[in-house]
Image 1 (cartoon, rainbow, N blue to C red):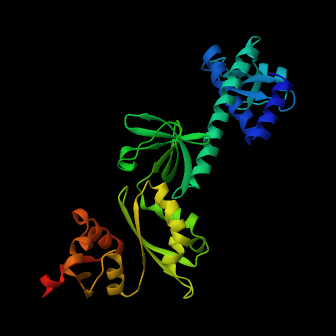
Image 2 (image 1 turned 180 degrees about the horizontal axis):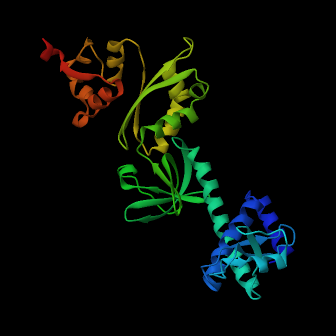
Image 3 (image 1 turned 120 degrees about the horizontal axis):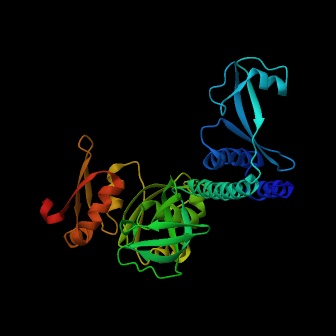
Length: 344
């Protein structure tokens, strides 16, 4: 190794944001292992890399003793005094033991260490980038399918869309651009593992936040979301400004804002309702598009009995109970729906 190598380390420091000193310390540690592997492991050695010239020197640390029993670890007082009169019994002497053929080993070892450290640093940068995007939306490109998992490219790395996080009936073709919700970012020995979802309710929430300026500005607040991915979502919104209609803001002019989200979710139906602090009013709205005649709430049991017109009963319950199920999940209340004639 030479001054050109030190120059290369300085360039890596600038480009990859990895400290030159950290790299040199890692190289020195690796060179100790390389020396012991090639020239004997029982020695107590340390390596010094000159920070300016790049010159590598290996030193054996030996203890000054009266009688030498192990010349790899010990040196006599007489021999120590030949180096310097300052040494006394119990002191340690550093003796250079750099082998002639060590330059090639040093260069090879240094290269391996630098490559490894660069790889680790790049993994760290990717992890830091995506840990800040946890619980947020990113756009990716579909690359391939492996054992029903869809591999999605997210810039410099890839993420896994597992079968449970894929929308029912949605087909993922090579090079398709899709928006995904980052559910979790984990550190692993092979780099960051990024888990993504197309079914998470957070995907719908983030899409509304990006599409509706009033939500982004905090004027309109998303209070609750319940979702059955690929089929239907209910979202409850509230406006802190009496002059702003929260439902209208989310729907947008001629339905333009909500349509962008529906298109992204491949036609998934979205019911936008106005949240209310009054449970009866909130529960009635949650059963949209069905019309509700009356709501009787039981605060203690957090349950409600809802009466709807006879012709609206199937609409209120929904196909396979979906509308009632989503309304209960949205509000957090147990809802019992009766038709007008059943109630009578």
